[in-house]
Length: 432
Image (tube, rainbow, N blue to C red; front, side):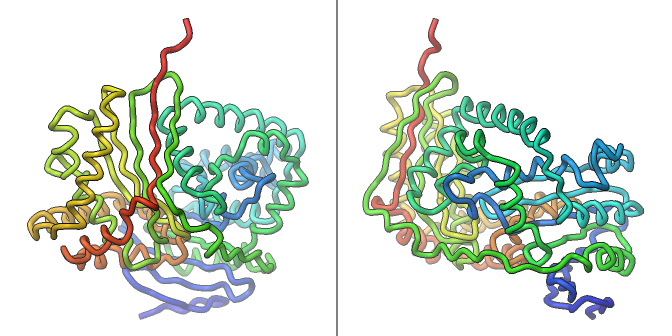
Protein backbone atom coordinates (compact mmCIF):
# COMPACT_ATOMS: atom_id res chain seq x y z
CA UNK A 1 0.00 0.00 0.00
CA UNK A 2 1.39 3.38 -1.06
CA UNK A 3 1.56 5.94 1.73
CA UNK A 4 0.49 9.49 0.84
CA UNK A 5 2.35 12.53 2.19
CA UNK A 6 1.11 16.16 2.18
CA UNK A 7 2.58 18.17 -0.68
CA UNK A 8 3.76 15.11 -2.63
CA UNK A 9 2.29 13.05 -5.45
CA UNK A 10 2.99 9.32 -5.23
CA UNK A 11 4.49 7.91 -8.43
CA UNK A 12 5.93 4.42 -8.98
CA UNK A 13 6.82 1.80 -6.43
CA UNK A 14 8.68 -1.47 -6.80
CA UNK A 15 11.46 -3.48 -5.25
CA UNK A 16 10.98 -1.86 -1.85
CA UNK A 17 11.39 1.65 -3.29
CA UNK A 18 8.62 4.23 -3.60
CA UNK A 19 8.94 7.40 -5.66
CA UNK A 20 7.24 10.74 -5.08
CA UNK A 21 7.18 14.16 -6.71
CA UNK A 22 7.21 17.34 -4.65
CA UNK A 23 4.22 19.23 -6.04
CA UNK A 24 5.76 22.67 -5.52
CA UNK A 25 8.66 22.22 -7.94
CA UNK A 26 8.97 18.70 -9.35
CA UNK A 27 11.74 17.39 -7.08
CA UNK A 28 11.71 13.58 -7.25
CA UNK A 29 12.07 11.69 -3.96
CA UNK A 30 12.83 7.98 -3.56
CA UNK A 31 12.22 6.30 -0.21
CA UNK A 32 13.97 2.99 0.35
CA UNK A 33 13.53 1.71 3.93
CA UNK A 34 16.36 -0.76 4.49
CA UNK A 35 17.11 -2.47 7.78
CA UNK A 36 16.27 -1.58 11.35
CA UNK A 37 19.53 0.17 12.27
CA UNK A 38 19.01 3.92 12.86
CA UNK A 39 21.51 4.86 10.14
CA UNK A 40 20.51 6.42 6.83
CA UNK A 41 22.00 7.68 3.59
CA UNK A 42 20.64 10.91 2.17
CA UNK A 43 21.68 11.44 -1.45
CA UNK A 44 20.79 14.01 -4.06
CA UNK A 45 21.53 13.16 -7.69
CA UNK A 46 21.61 16.00 -10.21
CA UNK A 47 21.03 14.93 -13.80
CA UNK A 48 24.04 16.81 -15.08
CA UNK A 49 27.51 15.53 -15.89
CA UNK A 50 30.27 15.89 -18.44
CA UNK A 51 27.68 14.83 -21.06
CA UNK A 52 26.14 18.29 -20.68
CA UNK A 53 29.36 20.24 -21.21
CA UNK A 54 30.58 21.85 -24.42
CA UNK A 55 34.10 22.77 -25.49
CA UNK A 56 35.23 25.72 -23.43
CA UNK A 57 33.40 24.56 -20.31
CA UNK A 58 34.55 20.94 -19.98
CA UNK A 59 35.09 20.00 -16.36
CA UNK A 60 32.47 22.49 -15.14
CA UNK A 61 30.39 19.80 -13.43
CA UNK A 62 33.42 18.42 -11.61
CA UNK A 63 34.60 21.92 -10.66
CA UNK A 64 31.16 22.69 -9.22
CA UNK A 65 31.27 19.45 -7.26
CA UNK A 66 34.30 20.84 -5.45
CA UNK A 67 32.78 24.29 -5.03
CA UNK A 68 29.56 22.91 -3.52
CA UNK A 69 31.58 22.24 -0.36
CA UNK A 70 33.11 25.72 -0.30
CA UNK A 71 30.20 27.58 1.08
CA UNK A 72 26.82 29.24 1.14
CA UNK A 73 25.86 32.18 3.36
CA UNK A 74 24.65 29.68 5.95
CA UNK A 75 27.47 27.13 5.77
CA UNK A 76 30.92 28.61 5.10
CA UNK A 77 34.26 29.52 6.65
CA UNK A 78 32.94 33.03 7.18
CA UNK A 79 29.94 31.77 9.12
CA UNK A 80 32.17 29.48 11.17
CA UNK A 81 30.33 26.33 10.13
CA UNK A 82 31.57 24.60 6.99
CA UNK A 83 29.56 21.76 5.48
CA UNK A 84 32.25 19.20 6.30
CA UNK A 85 32.69 20.35 9.91
CA UNK A 86 28.97 20.50 10.66
CA UNK A 87 28.24 17.07 9.21
CA UNK A 88 31.32 15.32 10.55
CA UNK A 89 30.55 16.60 14.04
CA UNK A 90 27.41 14.44 13.81
CA UNK A 91 29.36 11.35 12.76
CA UNK A 92 28.46 11.68 9.08
CA UNK A 93 30.29 10.23 6.12
CA UNK A 94 30.02 12.89 3.43
CA UNK A 95 31.27 13.28 -0.14
CA UNK A 96 30.29 13.73 -3.78
CA UNK A 97 31.13 12.26 -7.18
CA UNK A 98 30.88 13.39 -10.80
CA UNK A 99 30.48 11.17 -13.83
CA UNK A 100 29.32 11.33 -17.44
CA UNK A 101 25.60 11.65 -16.80
CA UNK A 102 25.26 12.91 -13.22
CA UNK A 103 26.67 14.48 -10.08
CA UNK A 104 25.70 13.22 -6.65
CA UNK A 105 26.12 14.50 -3.10
CA UNK A 106 25.55 12.24 -0.13
CA UNK A 107 25.62 11.95 3.63
CA UNK A 108 25.54 8.70 5.58
CA UNK A 109 24.71 9.52 9.18
CA UNK A 110 22.64 8.60 12.23
CA UNK A 111 18.99 8.92 11.25
CA UNK A 112 18.34 11.38 14.07
CA UNK A 113 20.47 13.91 12.13
CA UNK A 114 18.80 13.46 8.73
CA UNK A 115 17.22 16.90 9.00
CA UNK A 116 20.69 18.45 8.94
CA UNK A 117 21.55 16.68 5.66
CA UNK A 118 18.22 17.79 4.19
CA UNK A 119 18.87 21.40 5.19
CA UNK A 120 22.40 21.46 3.76
CA UNK A 121 21.40 20.00 0.41
CA UNK A 122 18.44 22.36 0.05
CA UNK A 123 20.64 25.31 1.02
CA UNK A 124 23.39 24.63 -1.50
CA UNK A 125 20.99 23.75 -4.33
CA UNK A 126 20.56 27.49 -4.97
CA UNK A 127 22.75 29.20 -2.36
CA UNK A 128 26.27 28.57 -3.67
CA UNK A 129 28.62 31.55 -3.12
CA UNK A 130 31.33 30.83 -5.73
CA UNK A 131 33.77 33.21 -4.09
CA UNK A 132 36.53 34.13 -6.64
CA UNK A 133 39.30 33.42 -4.13
CA UNK A 134 37.84 29.98 -3.43
CA UNK A 135 37.52 29.30 -7.17
CA UNK A 136 41.19 30.17 -7.76
CA UNK A 137 42.29 28.10 -4.77
CA UNK A 138 40.27 25.08 -5.90
CA UNK A 139 41.56 25.44 -9.47
CA UNK A 140 45.02 24.53 -8.17
CA UNK A 141 43.60 21.46 -6.41
CA UNK A 142 41.78 20.31 -9.56
CA UNK A 143 44.80 20.89 -11.82
CA UNK A 144 46.87 18.74 -9.45
CA UNK A 145 44.16 16.07 -9.68
CA UNK A 146 44.24 16.37 -13.48
CA UNK A 147 48.03 15.96 -13.57
CA UNK A 148 47.88 12.89 -11.33
CA UNK A 149 45.42 11.33 -13.75
CA UNK A 150 47.63 12.18 -16.72
CA UNK A 151 50.47 10.32 -15.00
CA UNK A 152 48.44 7.18 -14.27
CA UNK A 153 48.89 4.81 -17.23
CA UNK A 154 45.54 3.01 -16.97
CA UNK A 155 43.53 6.19 -16.52
CA UNK A 156 45.35 7.78 -19.45
CA UNK A 157 44.67 4.70 -21.60
CA UNK A 158 41.00 4.66 -20.63
CA UNK A 159 40.50 8.37 -21.42
CA UNK A 160 42.37 8.03 -24.70
CA UNK A 161 40.22 5.15 -25.90
CA UNK A 162 36.99 6.99 -25.11
CA UNK A 163 38.32 10.10 -26.82
CA UNK A 164 39.18 8.07 -29.91
CA UNK A 165 35.91 6.12 -29.94
CA UNK A 166 33.78 9.30 -29.72
CA UNK A 167 34.51 12.22 -32.02
CA UNK A 168 31.31 14.31 -31.63
CA UNK A 169 29.48 13.09 -28.53
CA UNK A 170 30.57 14.68 -25.21
CA UNK A 171 31.65 11.25 -23.93
CA UNK A 172 34.76 12.26 -25.87
CA UNK A 173 35.69 14.57 -22.97
CA UNK A 174 37.19 13.31 -19.70
CA UNK A 175 34.92 14.03 -16.74
CA UNK A 176 37.57 16.20 -15.12
CA UNK A 177 37.71 18.31 -18.30
CA UNK A 178 40.53 19.43 -20.55
CA UNK A 179 43.38 21.29 -18.90
CA UNK A 180 42.90 24.57 -20.80
CA UNK A 181 39.24 24.74 -19.78
CA UNK A 182 40.14 24.16 -16.13
CA UNK A 183 42.77 26.91 -16.30
CA UNK A 184 40.36 29.42 -17.87
CA UNK A 185 37.16 28.76 -15.93
CA UNK A 186 35.77 31.81 -14.13
CA UNK A 187 33.30 32.25 -11.26
CA UNK A 188 30.89 33.75 -13.80
CA UNK A 189 31.24 30.71 -16.08
CA UNK A 190 30.61 28.35 -13.19
CA UNK A 191 27.62 30.44 -12.09
CA UNK A 192 26.15 30.18 -15.59
CA UNK A 193 26.49 26.39 -15.58
CA UNK A 194 25.13 26.15 -12.02
CA UNK A 195 22.12 28.28 -12.95
CA UNK A 196 21.32 26.01 -15.89
CA UNK A 197 21.20 22.71 -14.04
CA UNK A 198 21.02 22.98 -10.24
CA UNK A 199 17.24 23.08 -9.77
CA UNK A 200 14.80 20.77 -7.99
CA UNK A 201 13.15 19.50 -11.17
CA UNK A 202 16.59 18.30 -12.36
CA UNK A 203 17.32 16.35 -9.18
CA UNK A 204 16.35 13.18 -7.36
CA UNK A 205 16.59 12.80 -3.60
CA UNK A 206 17.09 9.27 -2.28
CA UNK A 207 16.64 8.36 1.39
CA UNK A 208 17.83 4.88 2.30
CA UNK A 209 18.13 3.04 5.61
CA UNK A 210 16.35 3.09 8.95
CA UNK A 211 14.37 6.33 9.05
CA UNK A 212 10.95 7.69 9.93
CA UNK A 213 9.37 8.25 6.52
CA UNK A 214 6.70 10.70 7.67
CA UNK A 215 9.26 12.81 9.47
CA UNK A 216 11.81 12.93 6.66
CA UNK A 217 9.17 13.74 4.03
CA UNK A 218 7.99 16.66 6.14
CA UNK A 219 11.60 17.83 6.42
CA UNK A 220 12.15 17.58 2.65
CA UNK A 221 8.95 19.51 1.96
CA UNK A 222 9.86 22.26 4.40
CA UNK A 223 13.41 22.63 3.10
CA UNK A 224 12.87 22.36 -0.67
CA UNK A 225 9.35 23.59 -1.46
CA UNK A 226 10.30 27.29 -1.60
CA UNK A 227 12.86 26.64 -4.37
CA UNK A 228 11.24 27.30 -7.76
CA UNK A 229 11.45 24.95 -10.70
CA UNK A 230 13.20 26.05 -13.88
CA UNK A 231 13.24 24.84 -17.45
CA UNK A 232 16.33 22.66 -17.89
CA UNK A 233 18.26 22.61 -21.18
CA UNK A 234 17.30 19.33 -22.86
CA UNK A 235 20.06 17.81 -24.94
CA UNK A 236 18.95 15.17 -27.39
CA UNK A 237 22.30 13.71 -28.39
CA UNK A 238 20.87 10.81 -30.38
CA UNK A 239 22.40 10.77 -33.83
CA UNK A 240 25.11 13.26 -32.86
CA UNK A 241 27.92 10.69 -33.04
CA UNK A 242 28.59 9.69 -36.67
CA UNK A 243 28.70 6.00 -37.48
CA UNK A 244 32.12 4.49 -36.98
CA UNK A 245 33.28 2.96 -40.25
CA UNK A 246 36.47 1.19 -39.32
CA UNK A 247 38.75 0.08 -36.53
CA UNK A 248 40.48 2.89 -34.67
CA UNK A 249 43.80 2.40 -32.90
CA UNK A 250 45.56 4.68 -30.47
CA UNK A 251 48.91 4.13 -28.75
CA UNK A 252 50.08 5.70 -25.49
CA UNK A 253 53.74 5.77 -24.46
CA UNK A 254 54.80 6.97 -21.01
CA UNK A 255 56.77 5.81 -18.01
CA UNK A 256 55.42 3.29 -15.53
CA UNK A 257 53.02 0.39 -15.72
CA UNK A 258 53.01 -2.68 -17.92
CA UNK A 259 52.15 -3.25 -21.60
CA UNK A 260 48.35 -3.17 -21.79
CA UNK A 261 45.67 -3.62 -24.42
CA UNK A 262 42.19 -2.10 -24.20
CA UNK A 263 39.73 -3.29 -26.85
CA UNK A 264 36.36 -1.51 -26.97
CA UNK A 265 33.18 -1.80 -29.03
CA UNK A 266 30.19 0.54 -29.31
CA UNK A 267 27.18 -0.77 -27.35
CA UNK A 268 23.73 0.70 -26.55
CA UNK A 269 22.58 2.90 -23.69
CA UNK A 270 21.71 1.52 -20.24
CA UNK A 271 17.97 1.40 -20.91
CA UNK A 272 18.40 -0.85 -23.96
CA UNK A 273 17.18 -4.45 -23.45
CA UNK A 274 20.53 -5.83 -24.63
CA UNK A 275 22.49 -4.32 -21.73
CA UNK A 276 21.72 -7.05 -19.15
CA UNK A 277 22.85 -9.63 -21.71
CA UNK A 278 26.11 -7.76 -22.21
CA UNK A 279 26.70 -7.75 -18.44
CA UNK A 280 26.13 -11.51 -18.29
CA UNK A 281 28.38 -11.96 -21.32
CA UNK A 282 31.15 -10.05 -19.54
CA UNK A 283 30.97 -12.55 -16.67
CA UNK A 284 31.35 -15.45 -19.10
CA UNK A 285 34.36 -13.78 -20.63
CA UNK A 286 36.28 -12.55 -17.64
CA UNK A 287 34.93 -13.31 -14.17
CA UNK A 288 36.76 -16.00 -12.26
CA UNK A 289 39.49 -18.50 -13.02
CA UNK A 290 37.20 -20.60 -15.18
CA UNK A 291 36.16 -17.70 -17.41
CA UNK A 292 37.11 -17.79 -21.08
CA UNK A 293 39.66 -15.00 -21.08
CA UNK A 294 41.23 -16.14 -17.81
CA UNK A 295 41.89 -19.59 -19.24
CA UNK A 296 43.22 -18.25 -22.54
CA UNK A 297 45.23 -15.29 -21.30
CA UNK A 298 46.20 -15.93 -17.68
CA UNK A 299 46.64 -19.70 -17.64
CA UNK A 300 48.71 -19.50 -20.82
CA UNK A 301 51.05 -16.96 -19.24
CA UNK A 302 50.31 -14.34 -21.89
CA UNK A 303 48.82 -11.87 -19.39
CA UNK A 304 48.95 -11.06 -15.71
CA UNK A 305 45.40 -9.65 -15.53
CA UNK A 306 42.28 -9.30 -17.64
CA UNK A 307 38.79 -7.85 -17.27
CA UNK A 308 35.72 -7.10 -19.37
CA UNK A 309 32.56 -5.06 -18.89
CA UNK A 310 29.93 -2.84 -20.47
CA UNK A 311 29.26 0.79 -19.58
CA UNK A 312 25.75 1.69 -18.42
CA UNK A 313 25.24 5.28 -19.51
CA UNK A 314 22.33 7.44 -20.64
CA UNK A 315 23.65 7.30 -24.22
CA UNK A 316 25.43 4.49 -26.12
CA UNK A 317 28.75 3.56 -24.53
CA UNK A 318 31.48 0.95 -24.80
CA UNK A 319 32.02 -2.70 -24.02
CA UNK A 320 35.69 -2.98 -23.06
CA UNK A 321 38.18 -5.80 -22.65
CA UNK A 322 41.39 -4.98 -20.79
CA UNK A 323 44.46 -7.22 -20.77
CA UNK A 324 47.83 -6.53 -19.15
CA UNK A 325 50.90 -8.39 -20.40
CA UNK A 326 54.44 -8.75 -19.16
CA UNK A 327 55.86 -8.31 -22.67
CA UNK A 328 55.22 -5.60 -25.25
CA UNK A 329 55.78 -8.02 -28.12
CA UNK A 330 52.91 -10.19 -26.86
CA UNK A 331 50.19 -7.58 -27.33
CA UNK A 332 49.46 -8.55 -30.93
CA UNK A 333 48.95 -12.14 -29.83
CA UNK A 334 46.79 -10.95 -26.92
CA UNK A 335 44.51 -9.07 -29.32
CA UNK A 336 44.21 -12.19 -31.48
CA UNK A 337 43.21 -14.27 -28.44
CA UNK A 338 40.56 -11.70 -27.44
CA UNK A 339 39.19 -11.62 -30.98
CA UNK A 340 39.03 -15.44 -31.05
CA UNK A 341 37.13 -15.50 -27.74
CA UNK A 342 34.61 -12.97 -29.05
CA UNK A 343 34.25 -14.88 -32.33
CA UNK A 344 33.46 -18.05 -30.39
CA UNK A 345 30.50 -16.27 -28.81
CA UNK A 346 29.20 -15.35 -32.26
CA UNK A 347 29.60 -18.84 -33.71
CA UNK A 348 28.69 -21.19 -30.87
CA UNK A 349 25.99 -21.16 -28.18
CA UNK A 350 27.39 -21.03 -24.67
CA UNK A 351 26.70 -24.09 -22.53
CA UNK A 352 23.75 -23.78 -20.13
CA UNK A 353 25.99 -24.68 -17.20
CA UNK A 354 28.43 -21.92 -18.11
CA UNK A 355 25.62 -19.40 -18.50
CA UNK A 356 23.98 -20.36 -15.19
CA UNK A 357 27.31 -20.03 -13.41
CA UNK A 358 27.80 -16.55 -14.89
CA UNK A 359 24.31 -15.43 -13.88
CA UNK A 360 24.81 -16.69 -10.33
CA UNK A 361 28.10 -14.82 -10.06
CA UNK A 362 26.53 -11.65 -11.43
CA UNK A 363 23.65 -11.95 -8.98
CA UNK A 364 26.01 -12.47 -6.03
CA UNK A 365 28.20 -9.58 -7.15
CA UNK A 366 25.18 -7.29 -7.56
CA UNK A 367 23.64 -8.16 -4.20
CA UNK A 368 26.97 -7.67 -2.46
CA UNK A 369 27.28 -4.23 -4.09
CA UNK A 370 23.86 -3.33 -2.66
CA UNK A 371 24.60 -4.35 0.92
CA UNK A 372 24.04 -1.43 3.30
CA UNK A 373 22.35 1.93 2.83
CA UNK A 374 25.40 3.64 1.33
CA UNK A 375 26.13 0.83 -1.14
CA UNK A 376 22.48 0.68 -2.16
CA UNK A 377 22.50 4.45 -2.70
CA UNK A 378 25.57 4.20 -4.92
CA UNK A 379 23.93 1.58 -7.13
CA UNK A 380 20.62 3.42 -7.26
CA UNK A 381 22.47 6.61 -8.17
CA UNK A 382 23.78 5.07 -11.39
CA UNK A 383 20.31 3.93 -12.44
CA UNK A 384 18.97 7.45 -11.86
CA UNK A 385 21.81 8.83 -13.97
CA UNK A 386 21.06 6.35 -16.75
CA UNK A 387 17.54 7.72 -17.03
CA UNK A 388 15.29 5.52 -14.86
CA UNK A 389 15.75 4.39 -11.26
CA UNK A 390 13.77 1.23 -12.07
CA UNK A 391 16.77 -0.02 -14.06
CA UNK A 392 18.09 -0.79 -10.58
CA UNK A 393 15.09 -2.83 -9.43
CA UNK A 394 14.68 -4.76 -12.70
CA UNK A 395 18.28 -5.58 -13.53
CA UNK A 396 18.58 -8.96 -11.82
CA UNK A 397 15.32 -10.30 -13.23
CA UNK A 398 16.41 -9.28 -16.72
CA UNK A 399 19.82 -10.89 -16.22
CA UNK A 400 18.27 -14.13 -14.99
CA UNK A 401 16.22 -14.35 -18.21
CA UNK A 402 19.26 -14.23 -20.51
CA UNK A 403 19.57 -17.31 -22.76
CA UNK A 404 22.43 -18.77 -24.84
CA UNK A 405 20.62 -17.46 -27.92
CA UNK A 406 20.62 -13.93 -26.46
CA UNK A 407 24.36 -14.16 -25.86
CA UNK A 408 25.04 -15.18 -29.47
CA UNK A 409 22.71 -12.53 -30.90
CA UNK A 410 24.27 -9.72 -28.85
CA UNK A 411 27.83 -10.83 -29.69
CA UNK A 412 26.99 -10.75 -33.40
CA UNK A 413 25.31 -7.36 -33.11
CA UNK A 414 28.05 -5.45 -31.31
CA UNK A 415 31.44 -7.14 -31.62
CA UNK A 416 32.16 -5.82 -35.09
CA UNK A 417 35.49 -4.77 -36.56
CA UNK A 418 34.09 -1.47 -37.82
CA UNK A 419 32.94 -0.37 -34.35
CA UNK A 420 36.13 -1.39 -32.55
CA UNK A 421 38.60 0.98 -30.92
CA UNK A 422 41.90 -0.41 -29.66
CA UNK A 423 44.13 1.32 -27.16
CA UNK A 424 47.71 0.17 -26.64
CA UNK A 425 49.76 1.22 -23.68
CA UNK A 426 53.52 0.85 -24.06
CA UNK A 427 55.75 1.78 -21.09
CA UNK A 428 59.02 3.57 -21.75
CA UNK A 429 62.04 3.88 -19.53
CA UNK A 430 62.27 7.01 -17.43
CA UNK A 431 65.02 9.41 -18.60
CA UNK A 432 68.21 8.99 -16.60
